[in-house]
Amino acid sequence: MHDGEHSLEALVFWLRHQRADLEIVPILIPAARFERLQEARRSPGALARRGDAAARPRARSRRRDRDLDRRGSLRPDFSYVPYGEGGAEAYTRAANRDKDLLRGPLAGPITEAKLRQAFETFVDPEDPDRYRLTWCGRFAVPFGLLLLRDTARELGLAQPTGHPIAYGTSVGFPELPVHDLGLGETAPANLYHFVGYPAAAFTASSPAPD
Image 1 (cartoon, rainbow, N blue to C red):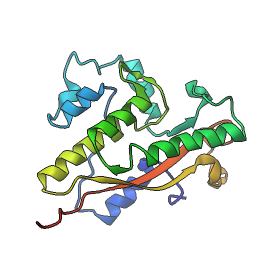
Image 2 (cartoon, rainbow, N blue to C red; image 1 turned 90 degrees about the horizontal axis):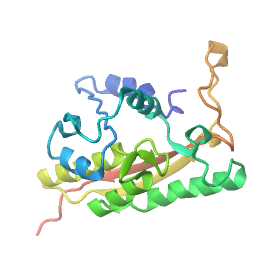
Image 3 (tube, rainbow, N blue to C red; image 1 turned 45 degrees about the vertical axis):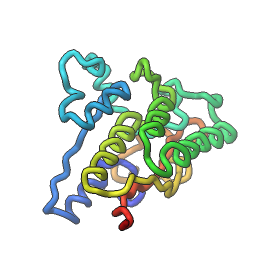
C-alpha cells in the first residue's frame, strides 16, 4: 500500500527509518510572487516578513494547507475544468498538458527563465493566489529549484538538469484495499475527477576538468 501512495506523509516514515541519523525538516512555501521566491532563496525568513503580500487571512491559509497533497489535472471542486467536465478526451488533454510542463520548463538545464515560465503557468503572476493550472507544487517547485541552483553553484557543481522520469494519474492505479479496515477514499478517481503524478529527477554533477 505504501508503495502505491503518492503522499509524502505516508513515505517520510520509511525515509526516516532508512536514515535515522538524518533530520527531516518540512518547509511550507506560501503564496508569493516569483520575485519574492527569488529573494527568499537568498535570505532565510524572507517569506515570513510581516506585511508581505504573501501573507493571507488564516482562512485562505487553511484552504491551501488542505490542498498541499493534491496534484491537479481535472478538478471540478477547484473549478478547474478547462477541457470540459470530463471524459476520455478531457482526460487525455489534461494529461498531455501536465506532460508538456514535465518535458518543457522542468526538463534540461534549469534556468530562472524556465522556472518563471513554470510559475506563470501555475498561477497568475500578479495574483499568486489565483490558479492557472492546479499543481500543488506551484510555489514549492520553483522555489526548490531556485535553491538547488544556488546550492549547486556554492558547491562548485554544474548547473542542475531536469530529467523527466514518469507520469501517471489516479485513474491508472488500482484503489487501495482499505475498505475492510474501515477507511474510505477522500476523493473520487475517475475520468471526471482525477489528479496527475509527474516524476522528475534533478541532478548536478561535478564540472568537467579544464
